[in-house]
Length: 142
Image 1 (cartoon, one colour):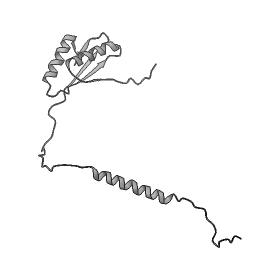
Image 2 (cartoon, helix red, strand yellow):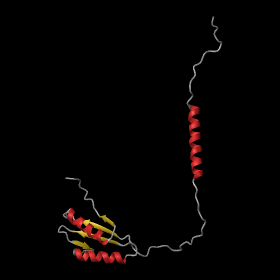
Image 3 (tube, helix red, strand yellow):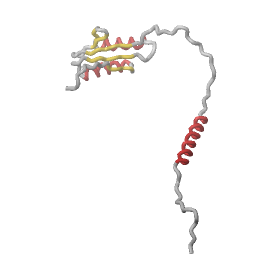
Image 4 (cartoon, one colour):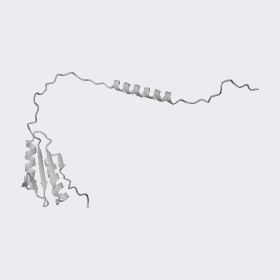
């Protein structure tokens, strides 16, 4: 004969809330432990400060424009390929830093080959900072 217990029989179940608390605790402790493992070595220094700081020299920027016939212009003065190469090499040699910037602007009628020819000429001088100046006309593709 089987005698029943006065307490009702409960099924075992896993409570999720204490597990979430434990996971957040472990996450926080691992984060703090990883931060304490980083070694930051530094030396205290008293560096001089500037009293007046202003830029006296403007950056070395050259704007090259290419028209529909493939002619190149710098500041509305026309240059041949050889003259442009000598101008850029002289300007690059005189620049105080090797980060001379060149902007190439192509006319709407200039072909891709003309602009890439100017880009190759600029790169052959040794100038690496070359950008293309573009303008939006406001009209979408036709």
